[in-house]
Every structure is written in structure tokens, then in C-alpha cells.
Length: 316
Figure 1 (cartoon, rainbow, N blue to C red):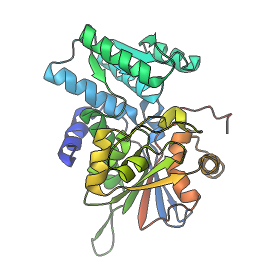
Figure 2: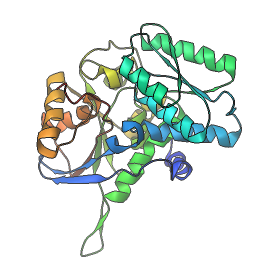
Figure 3: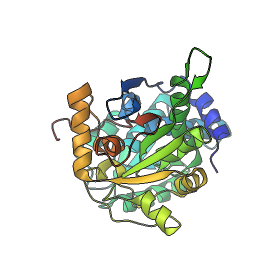
Figure 4: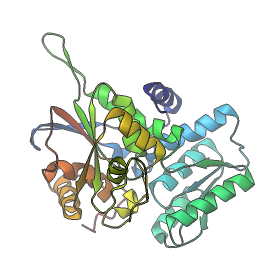
């Protein structure tokens, strides 16, 4: 179980290692009081650096991190970049297992961060199994992309920042905090961390592409199950199933799940550029698409997490 205490611990542990990303108040441009959490400005271009540092620093603190072999992670995307960055910052080796189909530009980025890249299989599931075997054989710390307590708690520090940065004291000294937080969901680590951080204070709306409904399907069926993965946001939200931690937190805290179409994601991404000159990946635009498409109407003061920017701005 992930609680606010776990996230408070993560905040203290990763302090000075990650950026406190800014908030942008966009007023009533989206039909309500809306602020953007600009998490795409985080190290390596996504929120994943928070969980990566929390996982690796936690392992160092409890003595399970062998500095000679370091860490292993399966990911050709944001999680791989974040864990490679954290490992380099702490001076330990990182091995990243990626599918053989991973874009060469991502492989080159991982190598530029000092990671050893292992190509295995033609899809993430095969790379994941290989990473588990490699970690067990070598004694390296295995870093999950989204379904480990430290990873989720690290992501949850975003929620603490949102609560702190949206506090306003009015003339009668009443505190006005955010009423709901809108986040994109793939494996669900971000959603789970944020929901645990704001539990009892704000609602969480989880947004998924209709083509990858991991959380939506789990909530409807009573537990995580595999779904088909396709669509424009599959490169960053392409988990086959939502994590167990994410499912537990979502059911405990009453997370609301909504689905958006690929066209709505494209339009939200373009709207961000046209209105604010912000470029994000399609996974990050998924959260905003719930508002720009009208699938979700803001209720009170709303924070939308723009979680990553590892994208090609030439491809709209």
C-alpha cells in the first residue's frame, strides 16, 4: 500500500536531485480554473526521474545496491532514460534492456547517459523478462518502469508540489487548494503516486487513450488484465496492463477513469503549441485531451500534469 507517508519520505530522499517543476496558470481558457504542472521540464524530459532517484537512493540506503553492478531496467523510453540518468548521477552502472525494435535515437540517448544497452526480443514484455533474469543473475537492483513502491512514491511527489504550489490565502485567510488533478495513465505509476499524495484533498481524473484502456478495463473487470496496445500514444503509454499498485490506489481513492480518442490527443498537443508554445509527447497531451475534447468538464480548480516531452516536434 502506498500512502502519503511514503511520498513524504520520497520527497525528502530525492530533494536536490530532481527539479521542482513550475506551474502555469491558464485561467479559464479550458472552461474552468486550470493550471498546468510543467513536469516535462524534469530531468530527462519526464516525471520518471523522480521515481528512479527514489528507487536507486532507497536501495543505496538499505544496502541492496551493489555499486559494482548497479541497476537493471527494461525500457526503451522514459523510464530507461530516467534510471540511466539517476545511476550516472550516483556513479553506479546501469543496464537497460530494450526491444530490438527500439528506435535508434533512444538507444543512442541511453548510451550517451553511460548505460549499457541490451537489445532483446521484439516487444517490451520480452525485454522485461530478460531484465528480470539479468538482475537476478548479476545481483543488480531491478527498477520497474511503474509498478514498484519506490517508483510510485517518487512520482507522487508531483502531487505534493501541486498542493503546495496552488495554495492561495484570500482576504479572510481561507486556503484555496486544487480540487482535482488530471493525469495520463499507461502503467499507472504516475496516477497512483499523485492519487495517494492528494488523497482526502483533491479528486484524481485518470485519462487513457481509447486504444490502450489499461485502468479503465481493470476498474470495469475487478482487476488488472492485459489489453491490446495501439494508437498514437503507445510509445509512452503502451503498458499491456495497469500495475497492481496503481489498481489498488485507484480503487482505494476513487480515481475517475475517462477515455479519449487519438484525434483528441493530436488536437490537444497542437493546441498546447499554438496557445503556449509548449511541445509535449502524445502521452502527456492525453491528460489535456480530456478537457480540450470536452470528455471531462473541470470541476473547481484543476491541475493538469504535462508529464513528458520526449517527442519529435516535427511529427504532429
